[in-house]
Image: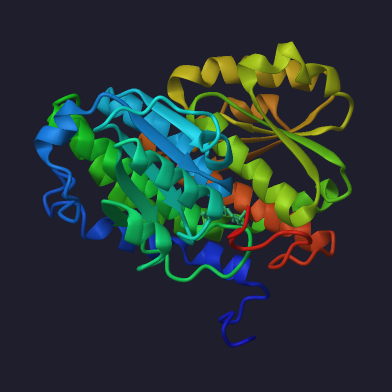
Length: 369
Ligand code: G6P
């Protein structure tokens, strides 16, 4: 087993470090050499069908659901198609309004999650087109879908998903850009910036991994805490949900993700001296609002770790510790922002003596309801 871990103490850490390669594999054959177009030759969905799309559903569980939340923001923003994102166990029982020709995107690392598979079958019965985003070739979800967009993360062993999530995000970016290009809702220059930005992500992820030695010593003091909050707006909120899930799964620390604009409607009552807060502030249009929210929690005694792009130096003045990530297009930020959150969860779990790769009560794939 030690050999399979490639020298890392846990599969999870190995898989975190495999992300630059996994991400590159997932996009490289799907963008043109001149960085001008996303090319998804594996899809049978025609340009006409993409132009006619009226509604997209994204359905998944766990971490894959969080990738779906990012997918909703990205597809709506770029391709201007309304997207409903659902947890599979809710979707399958809530009598969703699916019209023939609607696209249902199911996201599943394993391709075997019972609720996700059931949601796929329900949608098919209702006449939807099914596009599966999965990591396992020949999995049930892959076999039953009309189309498959594989993530090329390679086998993921640790229960807590890392490289599957980041490659699912790449799949969402590819679909968002592709649909936008076909529908003419994105200008050529912006599409090229996004595609070029995607090409830079593997090296940027590597930079974050190389830079985060510093985070480890800082994190020790957080390992004692019982409660923590993750705040963000827009895409940062979507990533906050995933950061929280990682911490809960492997360190058994209670964590709650909150849309920062909702703070005043409840969570602010829980912010007292020394409560740790992770505040994500990458989205340019929402940056000033996030800074105000951070000041609100600081004023109540929170210990804040901020995550933002290099260059946003004013954040340093309002938080206790800043993690800088390399600059990228706002839409692409989640795949970078999540890296420090994965490491945060990992190091806290290790400091708390938890079984990182096999957390209590959890399974890698939930194949029964
Ligand atoms: C379990 C795993 C998670 C995963 C979820 C969905 O809860 O522990 O890591 O995100 O199932 O799995 P899937 O294989 O459908 O992505």
